[in-house]
Image (tube, rainbow over all chains, first blue to last red; front, side):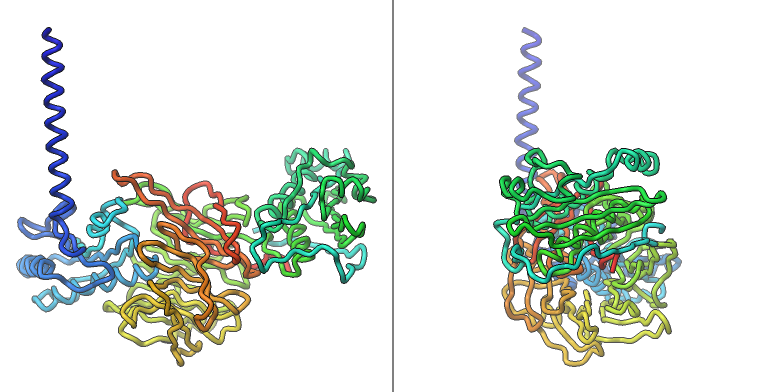
Length: 159
Length: 447
């Protein structure tokens, strides 16, 4: 009897978990992209409290979105306050492009971020740029959401 | 590398007759590969024993003939028949085939031969016979160091291929590629080299730094590639005989997408600076750097025509990746790709008449070829992801790499080398010990 009860209870819990996770994944897939630019926070890390380390791009694009510019302004503010810190901007592309073109595209994306940081007062000699093309995805998925997370420029502290 | 100091003595035993009844048509997809019998090369007891001691082969005659058989089969143009059906013993067949017997098992061509030990050297003679006409088509003998036995098999394959198709073979060649291992987000990549048939695989780097896009010098055992050594992505030059490496040029930023000029004296590559990639050359003798393109778009993946007079390359100056051709000084830039979709990785055929490319259209990747003016586009293969074709030295086969789609958990990723005939037939996976990508085909090692 007792065993039965326990089993039934745990079954209920398991079912509840399934229901929750189903809801969660549904939310995830709809709410994290605008056009095909990633807007979620799944892979995002923080340079400091409230200062995200990365910005995302549309397919084949290196244009900064409104959200990206906001992130970069926060980074610039923080970098101006911490003037001893140097950074590397790592540019990345998704896996849906040829390797060599993607190396150039990653470089172009990282430079878009660099230019913006410079216009907000971060000196160019504190910034270096490194393109990884499609060599270092953060999400190994083969779907539009994963690709949107991988099209990114990440600001990494160099010292 | 000892292997390359190949002592090759070629004797013509009999004059090659200028006509033949059997001929293999390589211009169309070959749905009826030529039935060919590859009789094991015969070997006398004493020679076999000595080679067993020297190079630990079980039966070097049989092993050389199975290399030939495998090469001919993978070309897709030949159908090597099962040895079980052979009626005539190898040693007797080599003296005088009983053509009725070979005709009976439907062989149209026959290869026979003999291996012997001459002063601890490997001596191999072989003959190619036209079974229907009852005639010898070719007879050759080689003498070399025993450790070269695999190359003897490849050279025999090349001679047979050339005699029967009228075009040079591509079997005595090597492939340099990037060997890959580990999870998709943290791939470890090493340069690797192997014989065209997958034998003698060897890793050339340790995997400490990311390496990409190795390419052979058409005239020597030099390789150019991209390395992320010390997190500075630069084009390097590697001598695979000595292991010596050096950075190409002194650029204040990423250099990538390298290739040799057809004479092997220049490297052409992209240099990325301030978000813009342009094409440069560097002369390896006098180190002079020249800027070839000057455009605010991405210009990359340059490849010379075999006469060195033109360059095809990839640019997004129209808004998307397309293929362009220009003179080698950078003048007369013309777009040649106008089909639906985007085009990348153009690479000029060693025969000069075609450009192979990667195309992305409606979420699918294609390997294709077009004429050098962009006409006659032909797509050879479609897949989830594939790119970067490299030509066999005779311009008949393309090798490229293909990646798999991962499952919903992001697992199941793999990258493999594949080859396909220019006709679009005979698509094959090229086996490698680890995953592989970015293959580049060498020139013929002999002649």
